[in-house]
Image (cartoon, rainbow, N blue to C red):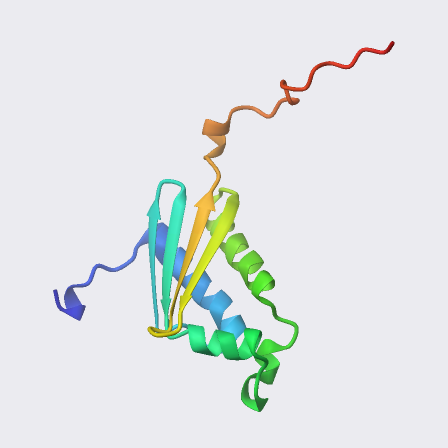
Amino acid sequence: MSDGDAPQATGLQAAINDSMAVVWRRYIGRRPTDVSTVVSGSRVECVLGDVVQQFAQNIDGGSGDETADVAEGLTTAGYEREAAAAVARLTRRRVLAVISKRDESTDAATEIFILDAPARQRGPTTPDSRRPDVTPS
C-alpha cells in the first residue's frame, strides 16, 4: 500500500488526532510529524511521530534557550491531564487511565487511554448499596 492509499482518519479519530497534535505542540513547540488514532471499545490508542526526543529535552531534561518558552511550568503529569481531558471531551467518556510509552529509538510516543463505560451502561447514579445502613444506637 502506498502513502496515497493509506486510509484517512475520519470523525472521532480525526478529532482526537487534531487535539493530541495541539496538546503536543504546547509541550514540544510544534505538532508531531504524524498522528494516528485507533478507537476500540474502551481503549483509545494514539501514536505520535517525531516527538519523544523533544519532549525529553523540554520536560524531563530541562530546555535550552530555543525551547525555554515551551517548557516553562510544563510537566509530564500536566501533559497527561491535558491529553486525558482532550480524549474525554471528544469521546464524552471519563478517562480512567493513561498509559504512555515513549520509544527514543523511533522517536514515537504511544498514548493509550482507558475509558469508562458509556453512561447508559453504567446505570443510574444511586447511593452506594454496598454500605450497610447505619442506625443510631
